[in-house]
Amino acid sequence: MNRKKTKTTGIEPYLIDCMAMNLHENQALKYLDDNGFDISRAEFYRLKNEVKESSQERLNLIASKEFLSQHLERIDTLRTILKEM
Image 1 (tube, helix red, strand yellow):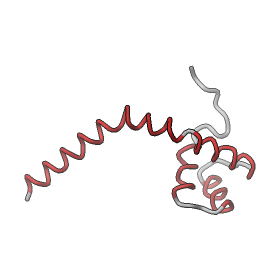
Image 2 (spheres, rainbow, N blue to C red):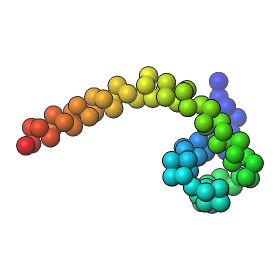
Image 3 (cartoon, rainbow, N blue to C red):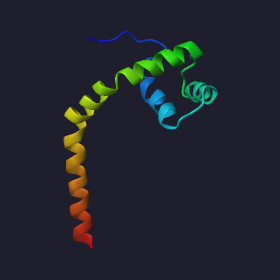
Image 4 (cartoon, one colour):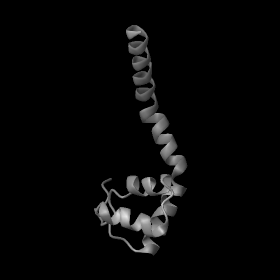
């Protein structure tokens, strides 16, 4: 099912950046605005809470989709490094 496009469609990676960089509220809102997301403080906290609540879902997605390819990529990198040494 396709989600309806809203003004916050695609904001999740930027919210995660704000959380990872531990930005203060004003800094986070400026960062989001600089990246094309002009939202209110209340909306910022609502969306931030949604990201926090979806942590398990995000981990499951990474485990099921990305882990295998990342693991193989790192093994290949290590083999290349060992070969070049």
